[in-house]
Length: 322
Image (tube, rainbow, N blue to C red; front, side, top):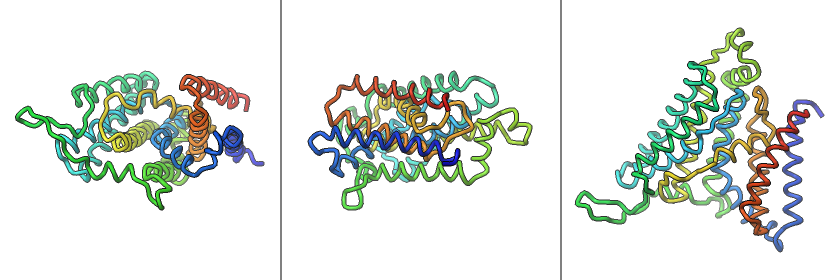
């Protein structure tokens, strides 16, 4: 077993252990039905999209706490454009993606140029984006119940894009949001494994000063890393709005913790310079199955939260021991 493949094998062993636990605690055979696995993939896909962006940032030895708030802002902006404003989806989608990318770039610029700690910068962006979502929505959920200019209310049809994103294909066996998640994984893999930007991201995370001396554009690389995280958060927000058929400024609370957990449990080190989106994909599945098994066996949410927290600590300790 080569050292290069060891993290993948360890991550797969953790996933295999989770599957074995599911087979034992199968809730009277429910775990063996494809619908359970299909629903698990759908439920975990939004978190997985966030985890793709988080992987890129963590590889640079950074962190992005703002992704859940950017998700909420994107969901609110998408619903606001489509429902009360009547903007076509073909225009609303690029606008929302641009907003997420710009705010992510702003975080990256503060980290790269002002030399502020990523934790502080993204914590500030988390508060700012959540506040902006509440300002845009007026502190209320944006639904298809809209207020007309004369002050009366009316119900408008839900945009077709909502139904499309929340639909299933292949005979109802695969959710579109899962396809979007896998597409995000593929794009992230290409960036990290095949593009020069990927090599720069690893170099900056491994040793920023050495990367700078080697000619790596460190500032630009960091800005692009956080811009990608913002872009993925906006994609996740669009999916969230479609699934909830509304724009909720309170949606996505603490999603950043799940995204970080998925990246870390997969085996990408918080120290930076190492990891891959394939590891993150395995981490997403591991957390997804953990939550699904607990749900099937009617475990309370408090138990799920405690187990997730304990697993994060164990994963980080395991990384240190390596």
